[in-house]
Length: 151
Ligand SMILES: [Cu+2]
Image (cartoon, rainbow, N blue to C red; front, side):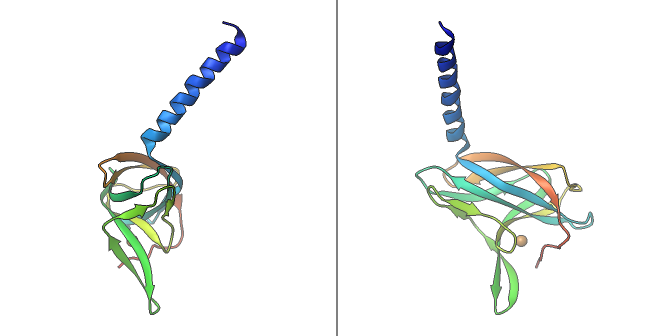
């Protein structure tokens, strides 16, 4: 085999693996972080964007992490100048669309933190979807000076 041929076959194997990897991951995680709060606070919030490359819509129904007792799906709302958080049963990710979790909007609430979160550390999550599929993601912890509003 000459050099060019060899290179081409390596490239095609690489591309094949890459496409398999994308299918297995279902969704791309972008711009994610967990908010670092003072050590005495037993909850925090997490934000990220999920991009759905699939032709089918997805429904995020449950999330777990080893560092918190519970992870809830929340949405911050404002009604007549009063800000509150509503607990959701699911978040939809449209086909070839995205779900955005960000401050003052949809977010994850990590309740009953089991350890101190420090900037620079990472948090592992397991995402469960309605179709039975699961996906893991790792988010960095980022410092923040504003306290997350909580009920
Ligand atoms: Cu919340």
